[in-house]
Image (cartoon, rainbow, N blue to C red; front, side, top):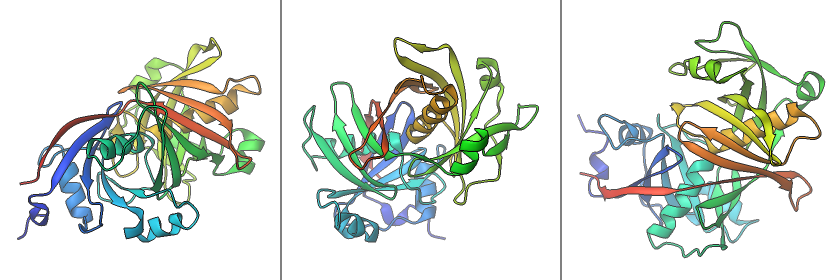
Length: 306
């Protein structure tokens, strides 16, 4: 029986992370390498492979149908972030992953990006603009919206979430960040720590394409020096609990800001098990409210598959 990694022998890889959200990264500029779900799962396996929350393939947009479609309206989106969850399933994008992806492009010599410069990236969640900063990267994640807007406006919640460690189902709000998220507010750090995310939470009703589930706790006080503060854990589709989730941090900040009311700030710090990321809401040129995510990106190792 052929091992799932056999056809990848000799291929170079890197391992990187953004606040603990870790990825296997492959450079395939001309789209010559086809990665099967079984190969992705093998490479992301933490015992038999390299280990990661997902796999990112760097490919020029012209070599993927999704990339070609984006290039029609965004000719600067030369590079496409082909992102897979750890189980091999396709995912729209990843906020921590896109920072690590751009850092990988720089490390590989595929792009040059100085502090203050911006790079346009194609993803299955649309085009993302990434700027290099002195401490990492900030990403215009694009507009956000509620998945069930009528329920959000009427009741402030759209679903119920059950999770191991929580005695009763909790109300939640679902947000589209280019990928789906359902956010639950918990009372305190003890509830957050006591929630068991080794098994997937149950969401009713579940959004049409499934959902990632965030459990968030507001700080006390919530706002300090015009910055909102929350702590969060997340269960990602096709992965399980991860140390961080960029789009999830944006979704958690968006829902907490909505629940806090009209005086809530536009700038937030979200503490995740792997560190801290920044979230900022601002008016986009398209007339919609956009979300910016900021944080570090680190390449920890490179090697050759054997």
